[in-house]
Length: 319
Image (cartoon, rainbow, N blue to C red; front, side, top):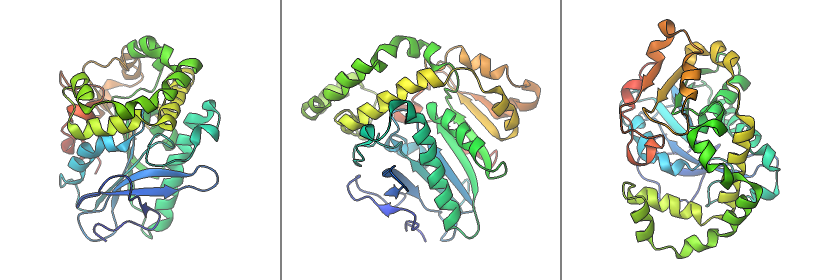
């Protein structure tokens, strides 16, 4: 089983080379959703996984940004029977052309990402005779999507859900939400998407100058994305819908699943801002203090790019 894809995934040869720890793949959806990009880490032991870590990215929903982070978790000996699957958001990944923005209205962009995750989880359950324990990890707006997935599944199906630098309420009222809101206007989305072709001629040194702390592999992911008209359009449509949809904190869901939720907050996060205190006040700190981690100074919201967090000890809480 080691280094073999389960049959619900197919190899994706144009996504870049896989290596001895993970494989690039596609998941073919039912109906009109098309295909999504998936990264798959098989268990270190040659057997069916006992635990499956299901990762939902932020926006843009490119799982390639998270390869170092997820590889660290997979190889940390947390469990030799741990499998990891990371699924990109539909139409965000430039290597798979679904013509997504022509298939659904912008106001459906969050709904289809929830369906995106649920269909893959359904395929996982159908494939394994002994269903693995599911642990969900979300990053940024992927945390809000993780909560929607959690609500949609049977209550006992997900073992735990980790919310990393979570944006789960009032995104439009955060410092970045206020300052960047103009790029999500309809005219701005169209202009930015139409300019994507210019990125193909952008020298790599320019991105290195703008983002000097980014590793070369992450700059390569970024460059491919900003050259994708469909990817930019889908990402900005989703961002606009986040501003309108993700508003009041869903306290009922947090309390219903409080024993399954684990939070990681960056010390300073302009995509969260004062909303962190709103979330924390929704809990009784005497009962859940062990489930809330505050990161050290210097770990940013987009920790996966330049400053990965030390993850293995955190996830042993439930694995």
